Length: 208
Image (tube, rainbow, N blue to C red; front, side, top):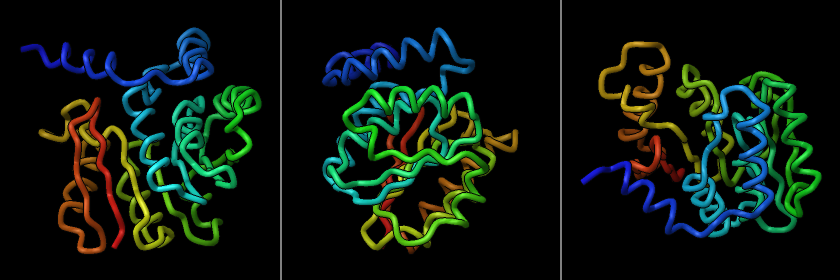
């Protein structure tokens, strides 16, 4: 059995994303560097579904890139929901905003330029839903920074939590940081979690 074939099967048997997101993916691959940063269909539809179940009024995304995951989350949020996105690449923000402006869900999204840890310090109030998908070296820092801002029962979702398998033998700083946050969460009495082997790993955390 080829696990890549199973991944393809799961993608094939997951309902399709909106046409605008399909176009966004194609344009990201043709116009932007590092298009593999995109969350992809399986993760995107998972985020949309989790947001639809949780109905977060206020959400935070750390690492927006070209807006695929942001639009996926916003799609599942209530009509009066707000999604704040942290991004350090001004070209990615401009690219993403062009799709937000065309989407019926885009008015829910506010992109903030600058280092996410600085942005998080400036935010007030609680969040219902947080998606972490930025530089891996700061994963532990992001987790600790957002946890106090998440309400009881709120979700924290960490993407690339398997980090292409490098968590099994962490050597680089990014490998070590992703492994550290996974190990911490598994023992963290402030939360409960399930760590899923979906695409490149998805760690789903609920705050007590």
